Amino acid sequence: MDHPSYPVDAVNRVKRMHERASYDHARVHAILDAAALAHVAYVIDGQPYATPTLFWREGTRLYWHGSSASRMLRQQSAGVPVCVTVTHLDGLVLARSGFHHSANYRSVMAFGHAALVTDEQERRRALTMMVERFFPGRSAGLRETTPGELKATSVVAMDIERASAKQRAKGVDDDPEDARLPIHAELIPLHTVLGTPSPCPDVRPGVARPEHLAAWQAGRHLDELLAEAHRATFGE
Amino acid sequence: MDHPSYPVDAVNRVKRMHERASYDHARVHAILDAAALAHVAYVIDGQPYATPTLFWREGTRLYWHGSSASRMLRQQSAGVPVCVTVTHLDGLVLARSGFHHSANYRSVMAFGHAALVTDEQERRRALTMMVERFFPGRSAGLRETTPGELKATSVVAMDIERASAKQRAKGVDDDPEDARLPIHAELIPLHTVLGTPSPCPDVRPGVARPEHLAAWQAGRHLDELLAEAHRATFGE
Image 1 (tube, chains in turn brown, purple):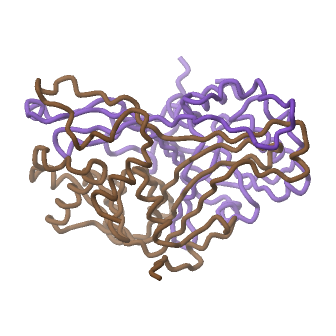
Image 2 (tube, each protein chain N blue to C red):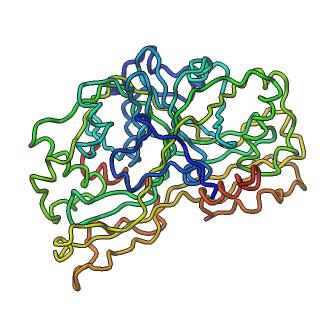
């Protein structure tokens, strides 16, 4: 059946714990779409940088944006190689030995060449998607982007040429003989959750919290909300 | 008074939103010590990588570790330039225009040269610190690290040569004229919190949850626990 995956070579082949690895679109995309934040690695004059940024996925393409004055975005305008990494830290694993202490996580490393989106219509659409990707239905009710704002904003796109997903999602994995020791061991789950949304103090009287934010409630898990929002905006 | 800071040059000078920037040890270290996860950027044959890893700070030195077979760690054994980035995503800012949608965050980019810790005693000590940095007092009660485990584990250290901290920690910052529009705007805080710790099913009868984990309770914020643990292990 249809089971697309990213090509594998020396750049993205997972060497360690390869039983935790996948190159399938479905696995890679699920980890990406549950995240708001990526770290983009790039090189300037031999010096590597990892810059945090909000991002989103459309098909096999990733987007991020920022100020046109940004060093990162200016550097990435020319089709340079980048690595976009997304990581969810899902838990801490407390074993009976230091060696088997570990973490649960989901991560993706996506490789490609970053290039500036130069077409103004595509850039305008991308800025709308940047909002819709979080809050489907929100952009239509916003004050429109001005020409000056559009000019001040750079959008970078990267076709995913290679990618790998890696995941640890289990409990303590001690050596069998260690399980007999009188030492406590446990899994501590971690979640990124919403606090209580705080309306802007000067919201006009009578302006209610819009229906498109109904799911964004205190206690909800960010990864679940982002995955739902991505499906609502882009489909599967 | 004593107010040490990292030197600034073209590599780490914050160009965008420099009012959000700091090079002070205190600000940089506070953001690092509240985090478990870093993304390490490095270059192999011109290809940048950003690899997620657990890490910790001692003084102005960062440590991370992993399998001796890891591509990342083998690459970093020779004193190569790296960038270690730590990011806390603290909130989503919903403005009245797409342009002013934003995120609250704290981030550090730390630059230096990664080198393998070759001395066996220093490596052993580092592996103890890796546990203590999370759970002060835990390592003494664990099954000891075996020579084979020590051999299988690489530790990388990086003296921070340059660093910058950047932070956004405020509410909606709309254009003044936009505040009059009948559009809802709000700040959604985000926190990484603990779920309910789950004991290993085969913990021996009579082995209680140790006192050194007392603070690690469901609902606690990970960044606060990590900052407390770092202070308890290393002092200020």
